[in-house]
Image (cartoon, rainbow, N blue to C red; front, side, top):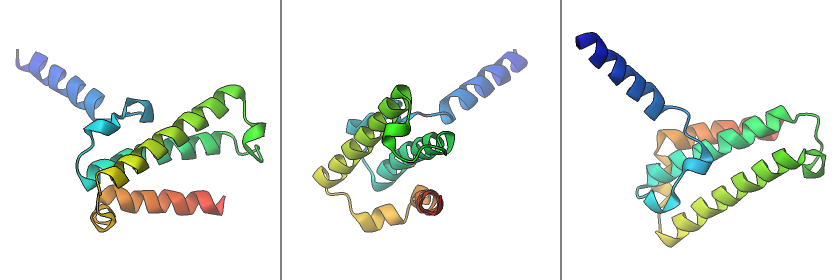
Length: 114
């Protein structure tokens, strides 16, 4: 019985905490500054992954139709998050205090160097 409990707990833990996708983000459920930065981090990570997978592409026209649609969807999600930040009057200074903000800055710097 204990083993079953441990297995169920571990499977719940590993499936619920990782692998969140931008498409899974429900912007209307974001409340606090760190909720928004966490969501932005998910989106920017996917953008970086897409960019890394298409290093030979010089611009958006060089992407496959599927990758271009994925990029457009990510851009749309980021815009949706930005609009919600403005609408809810989230304090940018509060966002800068979040751990995910520091990671966003790091990824952004990496993307600019490439």
